[in-house]
Image (cartoon, rainbow, N blue to C red; front, side):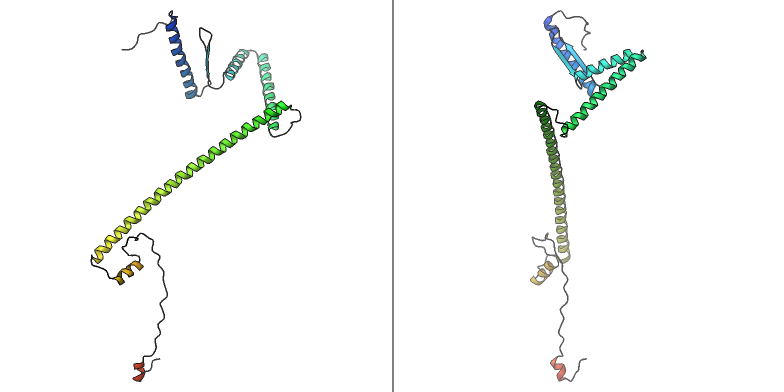
Amino acid sequence: MGRGKIEIRRIDNSTSRQVTFSKRRGGLLKKAKELAILCDAEVGVMIFSSTGKLYDFSSTSMKSVIERYNKSKEVHHLMGNPTSELKFWQRETAMLRQQLQNLQENHRQMMGEELSGLSVKDLQNLENQLEMSLRGVRMKKDQNLMDEILELNRKGNLIHQENMELYKKANLICHENQELYKKVYGTREVNGANRNSLLTNGLGMGEESHVPVHLQLSQPQQQNYDTPASATKLGLQLH
């Protein structure tokens, strides 16, 4: 069963009013945050309680939201008056030009230029800014190195797993070869000469059959064919 409709009017009980304010304030701020994230909107909410306490939320900063609101409101009022609109955009152009000049000057000072007119306090502030920037660069560098190390470790684990799979397949092929050998030669005992020959040709059935076999071709030894003595006695001549 759904709850009944609540009449929208001031709650007389102070405790109930405070509880309702706390719940609805949290829900309103939550909805404002969701709206800013889901719709990529710039949202600013300000709430003052009955006791004068401030609760606010802004997706960027409350100052920028208020400035944007005032500017938009001023532009809306100036749209009907061309002269006022021209003056407004002239002020905007001058303000943007001044901001650009300040940024360029700050950049030159960051690069170590035009420092003669700065006081000791200004130089200390500039030094603190540089140290903070350097610390941020180092943290970013360390983070990138850690990410690369983790990626290399992950790839190493994958290669290790692939090697293990290949090793299992090699063992399986070795066992299959042993079974085929048994089927061909039967279960009779193999003498020492045959066993050595099989081991030499990579067909041994010992425990180390999984060791790679290296084959090498050798030149046949030249035989010394001398004339037999019996042939000489019989008067045979070999040419």
